[in-house]
Each structure stands twice: as C-alpha cells, then as structure tokens.
Amino acid sequence: MSSCRPPCRTLRPRDRSFRPHSTRPTPLSFQKRLTLCAESRDTGTLLNVIDLRALREDPDRLRASQRARGEDESVVDRLLDLDSRHRAALARFETLRAEQKSVGKSVSRASAEEREALLNRAKSLASEVKSAEAEAEALSDELTTLLRSVPNVVESDAPVGGVDDFVVVEEVGTPRQFDFTPRDHLELGEMLGAIDTERGAKVSGARFYFLTGVGALLELGLLNLAMQRAVANGFTPMIPPVLVKPETMDGTGFLGEHAAEVYHLPADDLYLVGTSEVPLAGYHANEILPADALPTRYIGWSSCFRREAGSYGKDTRGIIRVHQFNKVEMFVYAHPDEAHEEHLRLLAWEREMLDLIEVPYRVVDIAAGDLGTSAARKYDCEAWLPSQGRYRELTSTSNCTEFQSRRLNIRYRDTDGKPRFVATLNGTLATTRWIVAILENHQQEDGSVVVPEALRPFVGQDVLHPIAKK
Image (cartoon, rainbow, N blue to C red; front, side, top):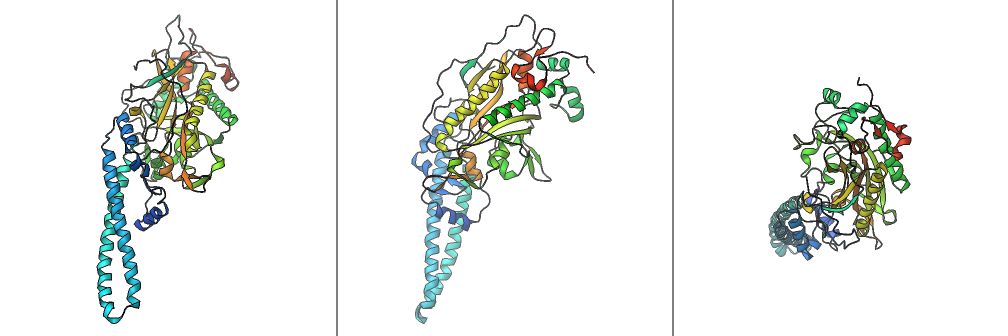
C-alpha cells in the first residue's frame, strides 16, 4: 500500500504554454504533406503530423517532462536532429523542384542552340528532384515515428516519480470504526442477492459477473444520478458506440503502452472501448469548432471493456477489476488557455458525486511516471475500503491538453481567424466499482446495507436486507 502524505499544495491556475506531443498521422502523400507544410509555415507545423516550433524554442521543457516521467530525455536531441535534417532536405527538394519548373518553362522559349543544354539539365533535375523527395519523405516518416513514441508533456508542477510517488491533496471524511468485523463487498453482495460472480464465470469466464436485483438497481441509480447532475451542469448527454475504428482508438493514445488492454475484433478491424472517452474524443475528429462553443461538454454512458492484461492474480475476488463494466464519463473540448481551470472543475464535480454516496475518500495528484501517454496531469479520487484497510481508486480525471486533438485533428477558430488545436479533458462521474465502496462503507452487522440518501429514489429502499440464496 502506498503511504499517505499530507496535503502539500493548493490546486490553482498555472502557466499553460505550448507542449509538444506525439502524433500518428492519417496516411498522406508526400505532395499533400508538402502542401500542408507550406500552408503552416507561420507555426512550423505539418498539420496533423508535426508540431515542432516550440520544441526548437524550448527543448528543456520536454527534457524535464521526460525526466519527470522516468523516460529517456535523449529523445529530445534525436527529435531536434531529425527535424533539422528533415527541414534541410525539404528545402533542397523545394529548391530543385522550383529550378525544374523554371527550366521546363525555358525550354519552349530557348533557341535551338540552348535547347539541348536545357533538356539535359531538365533530365538531370528530374533525377535530383526524385532523390531529394525520397530523402525528405524518409526523414519525415522517421521523425513522425519518433514523435509518436513521445508521451504528452506533463504539467510543470505535477509530482515527479512513479506509481508510489503520488501526492495526497486532501482527505475527506473519516474511515468508520466498526464494532464488528466488516465483510467485503462480494460477501455482502452475495448475501443481498446483488452480485453473482459464480454464474458470471460460468457464462463468460473469470472477471465477469452478474449484477442482480438490488445490485442492478444500485448501478442504474448511480449512473442515472451522475447523468442528471452532469446535465444540470451543462453537459450534453451521449450514448456513444462502443466499437471504434483504429484511427479513433490510436488518436486518443490507447494503442501505445495500453494496447494490450484493448479488445480487438480483427475480422472487422474494430476495437472495444475501455472508456467512452474514446468515441467522445473521436466525435469531432477532423472538425473546426467555433471558439464561442468552447468549452463543449459531453457526458457519455457506455459499457466499457478491458482485457486486464498483466493483472494476473490482482483483485481476483469480486468486481474491483473486471473485463466489463458500465461508466458515466465526462468529456470536454476546451480552449487550451482554460484547460487547467476546466480540469479542476471536473475534479470538483467528481467530488460532489462522491459526497452524495457518503464514503470517506481522498484526492491524489498522480506522479508523472504513472500518467498515461495522453495525460499531462491526472487526479484520482480513492474511496476507503474497510475490508482492505486502504483507499482504492473510484474516479480519475485527466487533462490531455492538445495531445489527442492533434492526433485527431480537432481545432477551433481563434479570434484571429486561424484554426488552432483544442484541449481535451475527461473524468469519471460514476462507474460499477462504486458499488464496492457503497456496500462496504454502509454495511451493518447483520449484512444489511444502508442506501445513501441520494440513491434512495432510484433504488426504492432505504436499507438493503440479506435474502435467501437461490
């Protein structure tokens, strides 16, 4: 168990200047990429592929981020070297191509004496242009591949370190002192006729389950309560598809280090999502949003699927770590300058939901080395589980800055009329795992469970009582 640390900082607005990102482009011909590069010379950006100007101006920012994550910072020098070589090769190609066009025009106007020399030069230039184009394209591909391996740049004040180096921002509520030995959520769920993992395994295998009776009502109550509160806060409700194309899954950053967690249907080349963040991020792919529409907030309800690869032997009992669950997820497209404050708002909405289910919890600031590929900053809310004597994650909210929007080509039109990439953020508002914390923290000695007041209109009972096992 990771040690608790006292609060060490106040969550506050901060500097939000440029962050370089990894990208995976949609296939483009070299000529198309060249055209896009020419269109983007004011920003040094190859649209949907490369964003390097700020890296050239401030390479130490990426170096610091790589160090904080425990990643190789020498990648910065390799990127700068490739970028320099690519730009030189591209300039050579453009110069030769311009000369080729000029010579071609001159041939028709040349005298007989000049024409032969010009034709020889045109033939030579054709070979040189072809060679220069191949060199520039090869360097572009090499640069793009390296960029794709680089995770998002973390916020400068995110904790440094790995999985155990999180910082406890705040603890809310006091863990209950029981005058009896508390049962775990599975024993309680079986007594209440709420959880059936035995038949889940019979039907589907390990880490599957049935929610039955009051268990199903608890989950529906949680998810409906979350949807209602989100809508009241200005979110648009969405029920998204749970199968997505490779470019959508990759665009959100889930086919990198998390690829082993994702279910893939090879016959259809579709992926089952582990969170509705994925389809909601892809919803505006290749679009330009009006600036006055930001922030655009969606609240998605979906089933989620995770292979849990690498988790053999972990949380095998109950429904803490499962292959399928339901979740209500907040997703926001925001102006990059407002993303930090929007992130804190998402965290506040998560905390309001946790307050409603009346469980002790803490807010933790996740260390850079434990962030996913796309996150620049992440806060988790962890609820106290009496049966384990420790806190376990219930919610997570991430600020992905422009990492996903660059990969998915989602922009807004700024006040100067130029399209710029939006920031994307996500956060969990309710999920199946919350049932674990509710059952364990509200249990009574006889195995009954008091329903949190906010959920009673949905469940239809104030107290859940054990039933005879069927």
